[in-house]
Length: 102
Image (tube, rainbow, N blue to C red; front, side, top):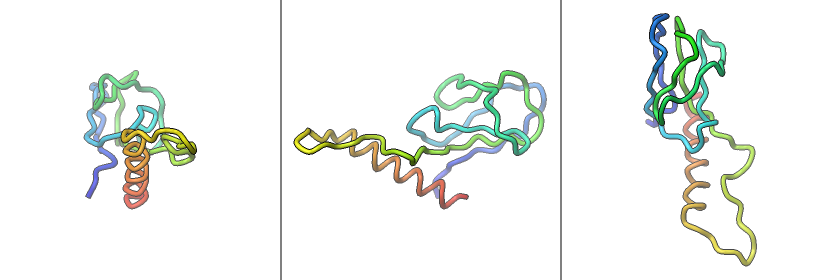
């Protein structure tokens, strides 16, 4: 089973919390504290969330892949790059995994 979220318990001291799931864009990373979504964080690196202030309570770091538009669009007569195809399939895979987990 694919991992689409990581759960932590904030102790009111630590501001760095890691996560283990892959993602396409940083904007697909979402965070909630105590069940309420927050934007009071940045990414310290590719797999670590850094809160602006130390949280207390339940922390959920999860992936929410955008499915409103495809990663790459193809046009008649143009070249199709393998990376663009892979990105579209990855987007579909991640959306299916997230749907299954919810």
